[in-house]
Length: 281
Image 1 (spheres, rainbow, N blue to C red):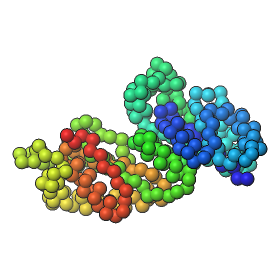
Image 2: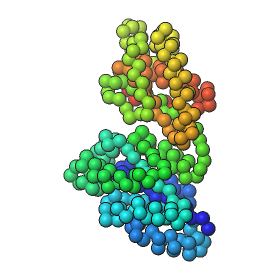
Image 3: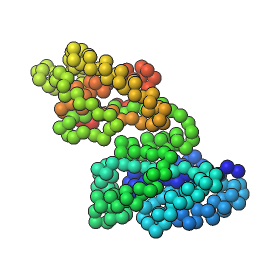
Image 4: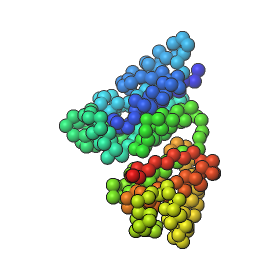
């Protein structure tokens, strides 16, 4: 029998419960917070079960500090014995974690009085486990459905081209979290045209003003070439989602026009694309 063990670790609020649910849907036997000292005995019980349990997912919780320090040794010992062991590590930007805690009104498990302190402490505790990761997922820009898809794709071995999320936004409201970020404020601005000011980038006249100018035409051609060059590399790395932020001053004209046009080009090349206009009126 070939037993497959997947440890799921990560920062609190990064989506560990969602990842475990995805593995459970793939028929993994899922266990939360099993002390590392009991892993060997647990695996022995799994092999003796009828039928034997071949796919096991173990969630790692930093709250169990006294057990956490021994986990890297347990993983290395299992690998040395030839057991198929994988470590999935879920990361997330600190500011996104803080936002999630504010929105859910929950306290951080490692610091009830300060989310910032809790995140810092947890990062320190998980540093050794993070170093063992076979698959690392930054959940900063992923919703729960995207995270489930990412884990499912990895665990099932099914390959899929990187999905592109195009996000238009206005810098006056702050930049978003994205892997690629383009500042479009150098392009001709329809805001200064009385006939275009109240329209948006999805209006053909606004899009033409932005993209058919000499500067806009040249930039858009270079942007398409650059993105199309990068995407196959992301595909080979197994990245499930790529967020491209396209920003102008207010998020109404230039960024919207470029996002829509880029989406059309990528879809014409067979790419799966989602478009979101964060600040469009």
